[in-house]
Image (tube, rainbow, N blue to C red):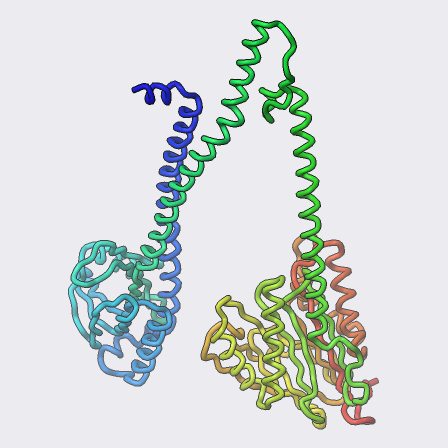
Length: 550
C-alpha cells in the first residue's frame, strides 16, 4: 500500500503513466485510422487496376462475332482469340478471364463464350467452361450488375467476395462490356482476381504498427523515467531545498543558473548557455549538411562527365570520311539525364545511328541509359537489322527490368555506298528528312512499342534512301515539348521552321539553329526535360552531292 501511495503521489510516476496511456491510445487510434484508410485505398486501387485489365482484355474480342462463335462459325478466329485470352490470363496473374452472353429476359441465366482459367494464381480448382456452357446467374447482385452493364448505365462493375467457401478464396470479379461495331453490348467480360495481395499487405502492416506502438511505449517509459527525473524532478527538489535553506539562513547560496536547461527553471543565464549550445549544434549540422551536399555535387559532376564520355563527343568524329557530316548534342535537364545518342562505324560501309529517351530523369534514368546504350552498341556490332537488334535488346532488358523502366529508341543503319537507311522505331519521335533541294519534313514511320515495356515484342524494319545532299535530323521529345513560362510547348512546327530557315546548313549549324529557336522561345523558363539532337548530312562519294535547284 505504501508503494502504491508513493507511486500515486509521485510526479515522475504520474507523468510516465500519462505518457504511456496517451501513446497507447494514440497508437490504437492511428492504427485503426491507418488500417481503414489503407484497406479502402488498396481496394480502390485494386478495383481500378482490375477494371483497366478487363478493358484491355475486352479489346481483344470482336463483339460482332459473339453469336457466330456460339453457332460454331469463325472457328479459327475463336481459337486465336481464346489463345490470346489464355495468355493474358497467365500474364496478368488472375484466376479467371471469361466472357458470357446473358439472357436479358431476367438476367438469370447466361451462356459461356470464352473461359480462361489460371488455378496456379490462388491454388483454386476451377474447371473451364466449354463454349456454349449454360449456367444460372449466381445471385441478385450479379443480376443487377449484368443489367447495369447491358443497359450501359456503368462502364464497369465489381463484386467483392470476401467470405467464400468450397475452396474458393477471397477475390473480386470485375465486369466490363464487350461491344459490337454499333456500340451495343454484345457480351460481358469478367476478370476474377484473388484478394490475397490485400490480406498479405495488411498483415505486416498490423504487426508493424502493434510492435512499433509497444516499443514506443516501452522506450518512452524508460526515456521518461530517466529524462524527467533528471531534468525536472531533481532540479525542482534542488530549487525547493535552496528556497527552504534561504528562508531559514537568509544567505546567498550556490548559483542555480545551470540547474536545468529549461528556461523556466534555470533563468536567463541558462537560456543563454542553451542558445549557445544550440547555435554550435546548428553550425555543426549546417557544416555537415553543406559538406554532404558538396560531396553529392562532386559525385554528380563525375557522373555527368562519365555519362558525357560514354557517347561520342569529339567532332568531327571521322575526319577521314567525306561521305557524310554528323553532329550531335545532349543537354540533360538535371546533372545527369536519361537521353542518349550514339553513332559508330559497323564496318567501312555501314554507319549505325541511334537516339533514345529513358523514362524518368536523374541518376536512375542515367544508369538505365548507359546500360541501354551499351547493349545497342554491342548488339549492333554483332550484326543484324535494326528490328532484330531492338527485339533482342528488349528481351534482354525485360528479363532484368525490376525497376520497370522503359526507353524509346530510334535505330538506323546507313549503307554509306548507296545512302540506303534501314531503321526501326521503338516508340520514339518521328525522324525528319530533307531531300536534296527540298525542305525538312517529318518521316511518319511505323512505331513499335517502347523497349523494356513488354516482353515478346517484335519490331519491324523500314528503309529510305538519302541521296547525296540530303539531311537527317533525329531528336528526343525534349525539343518539341520545351515549354515557356506560359506552359506553351515549342512544338514540331517551330522545330521544322528552324530547320528550314537554312536547309543547306551543315549538321552542326542545323542543330544550333534549332537550339537557338528553342532558347528564344522558352527564354528564362526552367528546362524540365532532357534535350538531345543528332543531325547528319549525306554527301555520298566525293563529287556526288546534288546542287540545290535554282
